[in-house]
Image 1 (cartoon, each protein chain N blue to C red):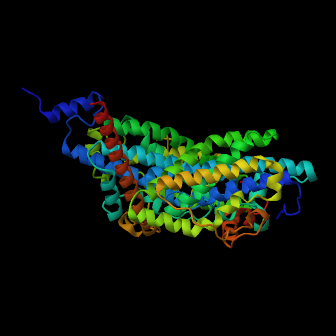
Image 2 (image 1 turned 135 degrees about the vertical axis):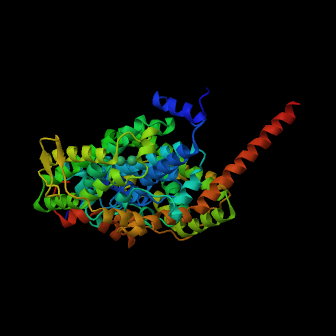
Image 3 (image 1 turned 120 degrees about the horizontal axis):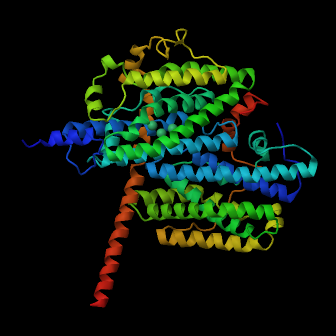
Amino acid sequence: MITTKDIDNPLIKFVLHLGDNALIMGHRNSEWCGHGPILEQDIALTNIALDQVGQARNFYQYAAELISETNGEQLTEDSLAYLRDSWDFKNCLLAELPNGDWAQTILKQFIVSAYQYHLYQALANNQNEQLAAIASKSLKELNYHLRWSSDWVLRLGDGTTESKKRMEDAIAILWSYTNEWIDFADYEMIILGDSHHSIQQDWKAKIKSVFDEAGLMIPVDGWMQKGGKVGNHTEHLGYILTDMQFLQRAYPNAEW
Amino acid sequence: METSLEEQFQQKIDQEHKIEPKDWMPDKYRQTLIRQISQHAHSEVVGMLPEGNWITRAPSLRRKAILLAKIQDEAGHGLYLYSAAETLGISRDEMYHQLHSGKAKYSSIFNYPTLTWADMGAIGWLVDGAAIMNQVPLCRTSFGPYARAMVRVCKEESFHQRQGFESLWVLSKGTDEQKRMCQDAIDRWWWPCLMMFGPPDDESTNTIQSMQWKIKRFSNDALRQKFVDMIAEQIKILGMKLPDPDLKWNEEKKHYDYGKINWDEFWQVLKGNGPCNKERLDARRKAWDEGAWVREAASAYAEKKHTNQLNNSNKVYENVH
Ligand SMILES: [Fe+2]
Ligand SMILES: [Fe+2]
Ligand SMILES: [Fe+2]
């Protein structure tokens, strides 16, 4: 068991937050593998899950490095993923929500891709070279994630009566979890600086333009859920970790 | 005297020319290939399920990524193979229908459960290993699209086999529990893997005609023997044992002798009585049924786009004239 709860360094918190978002999104998307509605799309979503796991690894490796510089603790990408409890995870709540149907999965992926695309674009110019390097590498992947998920929002929004209804239901279910992405925590503000304004604006504009083209309405302003960024999660995260961490917990200190 | 179409066809095969989709072919050749290629495609896709069972529980991020990529490869193999079968005049939807109705089969090996993490290694090493034995000769099979699909597939399968072996190798050098896990997986997968080559030659109905058409190039028993010989050597590196007291090197034959395969189990699993037949088919049917509205939306949208494009090009046309 390890904890990163007491770490106060904003950069470390921020990098863990990025890693956690990527890992938990990848975990949920990987649940579709072998069960997708169309074989080509099964491959596409598995591909996205693979990218996300890869991004998580990059961020965790960097976080482990930073932590060891700070307090000498020797951590790895795996100890960060497999040995922390849910209070240490800083991912947004939307990432951990169950997949639901294809419409909910698509909407989730679109909201997150639109965010990560603009975030990584900003980070690619960050003065922190390592962060900038991971972000520019990931940006190529995000180009694809954003295009793929936007295309599917259009197909479902502008497809059949049923698909439109399912998209609307997905929006109703998930909308209150969308704002957390751009409701920046202190540690994000410190790293992002002024660039946080443009991320917020670009994210909103992207969602609006794709929704407009798909014939979907953005709900009126209402209550927004949050808490993930500071470790207050939904009940779902515990089950994700139970699943993900099973072998590391049952057979401590083994090499795999 | 003029040679018949059938004779010309056989001559072409005898001269190692590939048969292409537009070429004349006997109906039975076409049907045999549709059955075999679609069965192979279904095996790739159903085969995603037992391994998919461990993606969320993979013990490290590196292993998780390797497993995801491997299963994604299998989906890709399914795609190449469905496309190859489609050139023979059957649609992918029809093939799915045959799978879901139970008319088409898939490899029985995927009706066995994956109970521990070591099963991921055992599947890569043994199941993909057996698949390679079957499939390398198929790279030279007489039907062009099938042969070409197999060339791409085989490259990736041998990569999977090495990864599977490496994963077991780590377990075999690990804690006592990991060693036990490793041996247990080998014990459970060994005999079903030997069954992957199909019934013994004297009971195999399709072999003679398929050999003449060069769809098949080696008999079931010959391929099984090659596999036993390979694994009996590789397992020494792992320091594990194959669960067969009769396994022994035969100096005279220059092959390993092995024990009696439980063919009753083979026929039972084929009939639907394996441990996971129901789960596997249910999972495929569920994915298909629940995906129906998604596929409908995608084609409705594509249709709209297409109509819009036509309308737009008509407008352009009207503007010009
Ligand atoms: Fe394969
Ligand atoms: Fe295969
Ligand atoms: Fe494979």
